[in-house]
Length: 307
Image 1 (cartoon, helix red, strand yellow):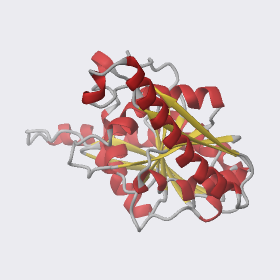
Image 2 (cartoon, helix red, strand yellow):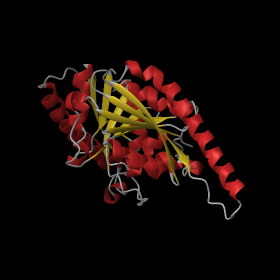
Image 3 (spheres, rainbow, N blue to C red):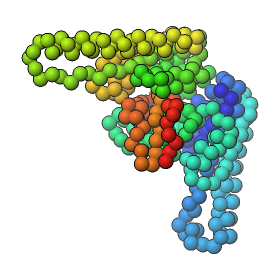
Image 4 (tube, rainbow, N blue to C red):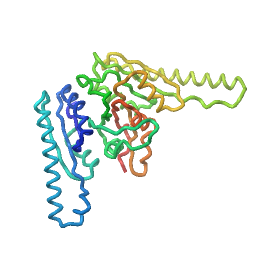
């Protein structure tokens, strides 16, 4: 991991991503890139003014943003961190941030989100939500809660990786590996199988057949998890696998996070936008919004860019 990217907007909330980002930069001796975007939509009174007034407004806004980022860059550079850069541009916020991150060669984008509970469908926040659906970079989403402090030494201790049996979902393993420490980290691979719909019958052979099918599915899931867990032994101190049965896969994963006391969950998404905006993948969507711990979000290979 060579470059860590942090979007900032001048708020304390956004700045709460800096301790974790700095810890990761120090751990990997990576460059830290701080970025801020000046909106391309000026205040309404200025929008009706002349071009000179608009030009002056943009210049002043960019100047303030540059001074703000430079203050943070200088402060962080005075610590044990090495290279710290500041980037300021104007334009649509999420598109511009993605462009800056791409040009900077970012390996990971670290940002805070207003995550909601599992049963509340409010957006994470427009910028985070758009980056989840648009960005080709992995995103580390942090919650601004006192119970969540930066990982000691930038190392997650207990990592949960939900899988669905597809090779595309395994990108969550690949991206999480970069954050693991073979002497510290523990990994739990989990796969949730849906509970069968109750049969409205008293015919005993039906129930027996349904039970046998469920056992077969659980055995296949366990075999799959054991297979993909093998290579992880080189990256983590311990790797366990778990097959859960639940009526709701997303809630099953959230329950698993609590039981394992995980401090990171790594998920793969089908980030989409435009006409396909509802397709994040219902399970990933529920985990991202419902988890109270950092979430590492990675795009599944072959997923479409935002339309």
